[in-house]
Length: 73
Image (cartoon, rainbow, N blue to C red; front, side, top):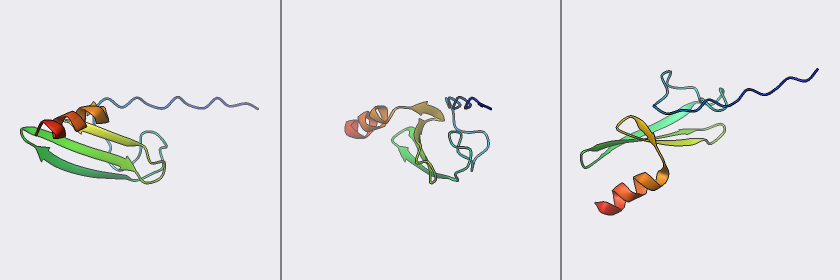
């Protein structure tokens, strides 16, 4: 019997159910929030699969966007 693997969920905003990884569905999430100027930044990582996400004002952003904010300050 062949079972197809489920497609990983695409996460565009912060997870609605904090604590469980949207990628591996098993790991606990570690979240660090900070303010940079007028912006709220949040870094979230899964201790199990090591997936990582950055959020700016609640929206998913690439790491390069976060680096650009830091360099400008």
